[in-house]
Image 1 (tube, rainbow, N blue to C red):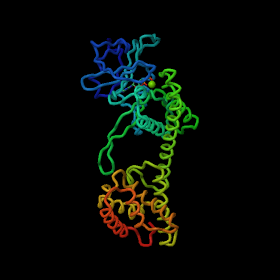
Image 2 (spheres, protein in one colour):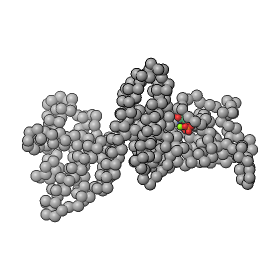
Image 3 (cartoon, rainbow, N blue to C red):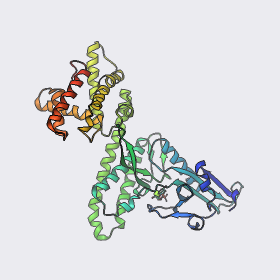
Image 4 (cartoon, rainbow, N blue to C red):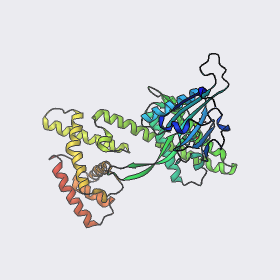
Length: 401
Ligand SMILES: Nc1ncnc2c1ncn2[C@@H]1O[C@H](COP(=O)(O)OP(=O)(O)O)[C@@H](O)[C@H]1O
Ligand SMILES: [Mg+2]
């Protein structure tokens, strides 16, 4: 190989492992004597993709054209900067004779994009062939739908939205109490056709969704005629499920932005994580009520961003602090503070409707606890009394919690 024809644009840390590969040869001509290959399942692809193991790392190498190699590598970086789950690029490589000569012939030109191998990922196409439970399939669709919603929310058009271009992976995350748990997430694995726009149009959104549905349909191509008739109705259910999850998540993302703009509060900072629209609505309603209360008290209309900050400091944070002090999560293990808070408030609201009068926070907490905690009754009573006493100290008098 003549190194003067080689253009290596590889991140420093991977350079030593990658610079001496046979870049002067097409990927399908690389052989085991030169390179250690890994036999890992992969999705359907137009290009040749091979997985290799070097001294310190494992990579996926895709042979493509120079423009795509450069573009894909840059795009992965941009997506990662936006916090979108995608592959980590190691860089790109060109091998081209007479690269810098005018009128050079184009025939001996090779280009590669190199990404870090996601060894733990399981390509979907294989997953769907397994005798998969409905629930697992749904988890995958939900992860894929969320990825697509995040892209569109960031005004990114995929252009090749497809099950073949997604990898799924369990990632470890921590909850607000620092306990770690795993979550299944979808990763974008093919960025060749990505366009980052100022504002994505409804047409492009529809195109991406259609692309995704087509890829769901394509699964049936691998089935026999008998299996096909059986699976078509199932795929329709899958598509509906995907659409529902997509829509819910897309709306949630929009709602979060709207909430942050209106109140000046940062969701991540104050509420850790919001997973449903209902919680946002409920919080907003309470901030509005707090605004009413503050305005009454001061005799003039109080600003909403001021109110929001005041509500967080004087009502929400102190209540959550009491939740934690009383180890409330031992009574309701499958929740987080925000959800618990909004759930109790919602419970109070419905109980009051049922009784045609404001039942008050004590009755609400009591009834909620009886319904949703599996702790023994006397223990629970004690707990509710304690919590109630503390809460009444926090919220302003004649404040309708
Ligand atoms: N870094 C990677 N780790 C694991 N699998 C990968 C990686 N890069 C690509 N693949 C697999 O290779 C397949 C083809 O790659 P892709 O970029 O989609 O090629 P094409 O542009 O030809 O569609 C993907 O479906 C994915 O399963
Ligand atoms: Mg692809």
